[in-house]
Image (cartoon, rainbow, N blue to C red; front, side, top):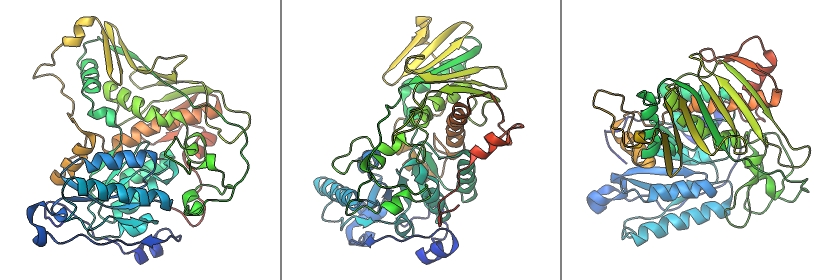
Length: 448
């Protein structure tokens, strides 16, 4: 889209990217290009925010469909290391616009196997990145450096130090950024946090977060990587490991992928659901730009098998103001977020809010009280902010802090002992073993 409403940095070429940052190989399939606005008038695709979707698997297709339903943007390109998936995404995009009656002016959705080729396209305003967790930060940094605005699925990063680099980079390049913590755009979640922030339950002392866990699985034999999947590129910065289907994603359909249960690619449900619920907890606690000062966690881990993230768990975080955040599986804490104060409580989960006393359900927040950022559509909020250059409801530094509290819990669970944390320096105090877990080495040639 050509518009002076958008502040664009210079777009790097792929050659510059390869020489100056990270390097690998990948095929690219080029489709027809977007037709200039002068040909089709005000409704031409080039008059809308143009998006490229990087990662079009299970969640990626869902997010892409969400953007397809918003008239202020146009999906013009898709990218995935699995050719079957980017081809299906392409067909989905083109079928959608044809059904909307815009097919005649939409000349094709381009497909890429390498995210760098998509990012290098000068006619793309923003990207949606919905890749496995270990692939979040590298393409997001590349997009920021190329002048693209970014919608990135949660959790923000695989490690705390990666998240810090990403947050600093996004702000350095003045990019609009939204993380996919869509609970922030839910009216009931905002209502719950406003009740807490305005003292309706008295002095807040404890927050209890609960969510489910993943089951383990047994050993899986190595398999040949399927045709159309660039498995080495899929592994990317993660350690090399033999291909087996349950390590990656189903080759038929869009079922829940196995990588979600493997520590090389993510931390398990502590970041899968924790990035949502702990983010809501931070919103209500007014700790969006800080973190705990003490963390203690315990968890059970599979004794063998491919899937090795945590099972049943409990983490207790203490914040500088004395508030305790207790995050645990659903056998210990009920699903959702429970704010407990000296005069009552508020419990929120998707589709349900409950309070004590019950009168809080109809309590009105007055004009002189705290009113939190209001968004009724998470992706729509991102697009509105791309146009206005305003801060989104889930900006990068807030996303980093919400992800960090989850990753701190993961480190505490794996070490099995109490840790002291400096949220300003983002370092553990007098604990080099824990500090070494703030970062993971990247497999060559990938690096930040």
